[in-house]
Image (cartoon, rainbow, N blue to C red; front, side, top):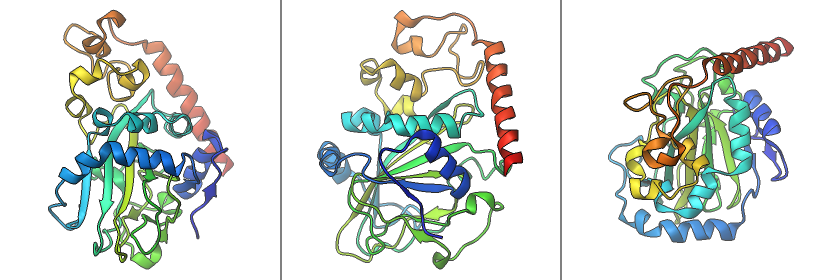
Length: 296
């Protein structure tokens, strides 16, 4: 089964539906190639200074450069891309809110072998989440063209519906070939891996992922984004990187303060969140999820 491609004119509901069905989908040319060149220019000093990975899984010929919200204005725009956020809102709508999980340039150098096929949600201590309960919505933006030869991400379509801790061979997967400026959107439950780079050039992509707000973020955004930069960010982005409560009360500061008050005292809001509203959101999400399950 090849990976589904959708046009940039698609909407969040269509992308979310494709994720639920196949675990991964490519949206072609969501930004221009020139835009991605601009991202590369902003990040070049940081990528050049990044060392190669320390083990086979991270890649001994692969650089992983994080902290992108604090380092790149254009990456902040990618984080806040309307289609991606609409997709996350739909796909992770069973939770009260979602947050930014990690930001990372993955630059796979020539000669890097294929990565072990895995699920990203294994980052949560290999906890066996109930099948069909999604906790992550992930993206990889193509900074260069992704081809089978240069190590395009490989996906096992439909594996989001399979059991946990399965093992796959490389031939069980499909190459997520796409042009610069396109984005691979995939669930935390789909089995996938970085491909082998058999070319003479580096394959670079920007991995921006989101998770439900009651789980810990893989990249610590509060430390990755310096406070002096955080104070300059738009409120919606601040909330997304974690300066908001997760669910009813998670993440409050000292005397029940909303965490956004740390960077924006003018937004002071005392007490916990709205318990009744949280219950209603979850009740509505549960009803929708059960209806969708029955429809299948």
